[in-house]
Image (cartoon, rainbow, N blue to C red; front, side):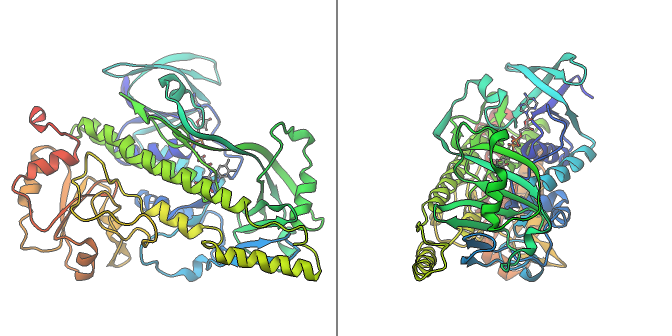
Length: 543
Ligand SMILES: Cc1cc2nc3c(=O)[nH]c(=O)nc-3n(C[C@H](O)[C@H](O)[C@H](O)COP(=O)(O)OP(=O)(O)OC[C@H]3O[C@@H](n4cnc5c(N)ncnc54)[C@H](O)[C@@H]3O)c2cc1C
């Protein structure tokens, strides 16, 4: 191990682990310190977004995520109901994975894979990568960032020994209110606490046999007090999480009536075993800065959002991928300073829109119509149930899951200093189809190449120049990249459907799969293009 580690990652939650995987996949030496033992006790995030699954595909982890927990033959429905044994009010259907077939916009659709299954997949993979070192029960105590590096103080929680470790870069993936953000003096901005919630994680084989609603992913419980909780099927067998939307801010876990809440959700008594009870705060916050100098923030350290919509961890995984390839480019010697500047410019707007969509859904869900009669067996109850269903149909669609798929897929690094601006108009922010827009800054679209290979499988190692017309001379770009040590492959694609999808004869794709530049002809000054996408606005000084 080098005396100075290139990248020190503080925090071994899913985001820190994803960063270790991203750096380790690029053979960048990094060390992750995590004060905990690495065992995940609470499921938290339940569904990997399409984009997270696409990253998993690149890391070789998609199959493991698919097989982690949720049975492929269970539907993923969202079911509004008065209790598990009560009245069904409304259902948003999602076909079982086994019946979904190929999706038009991605090689990997979203997958139920809660953190109790996902974090260990990341952890095992990160630990297997030769350039990544994971240190559990190890805490970052303090750091001092200078022009040439970051000096840190680390403590082993096993032995109590404290030692100094020098790093070129430090990334704080240390969750909400983490030390790295506070030490940088970066504030959070936003509404703060939206509500006090509480999750009961429990085991019960019996619960699924009590009712006639069948399997779904989310059971949204609505009674005379309105939509009061969500019951989430964690593994489609016996693990469940009941999340209450409004808990007492001063709640004492010992005194909390978990039994009462579970019976209220089920509508009758049943056998269960409580695994944990976790009070938590639903927050809406984004850090005002994503880092300074050689220190960066990613994941919950940088943004906090309501889990309604499943955007929190998935947004953090996108951060890890973004900062990961940029740090790798700098450490490998071909990346310039604007790569690091672009991290905040690209990722903070994604957090702001994710936070807004999550809060929006929280307000939407908790303001659904209320009726004291909704669970009653009476004409008034029947009327209330019909009104509830009509209200859901009349609003923008129950559950908002499809809207969130848009938010998760269609973000575009529109104003990034490292992309060459597209000359086409920006796509509409609402109502466009998920992730199919090809433009500079957007995720390069998926199309099948044959034999189960996606266009997305072409990306990851360095830049890729897709050439849809062999008469175009790609040599100037190729040569300019080679002269600057920028890894670039020219790949010819002779498929008119994919050519139409990508919209230009030449499309340059970044290591993270986002489009950097598109044109119908190779530029006269190819060096300018390459310099911009590798983060040098003043290339002369670096040649
Ligand atoms: C009930 C609930 C439901 C959720 N549902 C979803 C969902 O459906 N979809 C979704 O995308 N997200 C969801 N989330 C959010 C998701 O769990 C978080 O966004 C995610 O865990 C953030 O990951 P992270 O790695 O950034 O931070 P964390 O998971 O908080 O990890 C930070 C780690 O840093 C470590 N650490 C802190 N300080 C130090 C230090 N000084 N030295 C060493 N280690 C340190 C901590 O021990 C911790 O392990 C949910 C959250 C909750 C609470």
